[in-house]
Amino acid sequence: GEDVNRYAENFTIEAAGTHQLLTIRNPLAGSGAERSFALVPRDAPLPDLPPGLPLLRVPLERVVALETVPLGYLDALDALDCLAGVGSAQYISNQQVRAALGDGSIQAVPSGPGLDAEAVLLLRPELILVSASNDPASGLPGALLRASPAILPTTGYLEPHPLGRAEWLKVFAALLGKEAEAEHIFNETADRYEALAESVRDVAQRPSVFCQAPFAGVWHMPGRKSHTARLIADAGGGYLWANDPGPAGIPLDLERVFLRASGAGIWLQPGMHRSLESLLQADPRFRRFEAFAPTITVDGDRL
Image 1: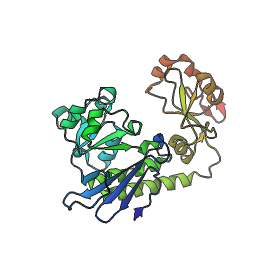
Image 2: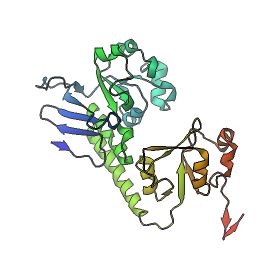
Image 3: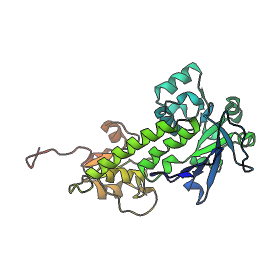
Image 4: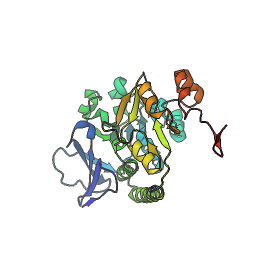
């Protein structure tokens, strides 16, 4: 039978007797776009499977991750040693992976348009983890698809609830034989999150919040259905774009954001900027947001 997820919508794991059936849903590829995999224990005999259903012997031993998102999950499960190769190596901050790249036990493979199918296949991966936008495998070279190692689109980052993202730990656990650890980590995280959200559900004063920063002139503000909007609400914040219909990211210009957010108290995740100086270099007008240089009040008097 199917284990019912607490929050995640983009995967299911079903016990099917001789194997587990992992099904990944990709909302970017239209409704009903699904990919399934039969997870069969390494030492079990080959079960009778429907034709065309990819077979993975678990726990996996050689995985190539073409994007960085899976690394956090693998780290949480203490399973980074299953990695044979990684893409986007320049964006990886995990110390263990950086050390393994340094000593050659994990290979860096170019991802994106420069992806070299042969370099990936030389690593003999049992599974290649790709971003959902590569599905149906549009961004992967034909040579790689013809050699047909299993290719799994990770769609956890498209989960509408933050705990849906966290629950994707169970996908990696099923691939690596670490279900008990994942169950424990996830349930502890979800229980704590739910208790914290409950504690501020009825708070009257909610600080006003906006987020992100313009990139190439466009300010993509997360929409009301985004996990960011959900996180802010559950933390007791008043998100200024919480009622805007529309997609996960609303494209705006600086003027429209300023009209609504000039007096907001909190500015979260200001794009790639890590300092006030960096923000001002990008656009000196950011100084006019109240959140940039808040006026401090003591006993009702502005300092």
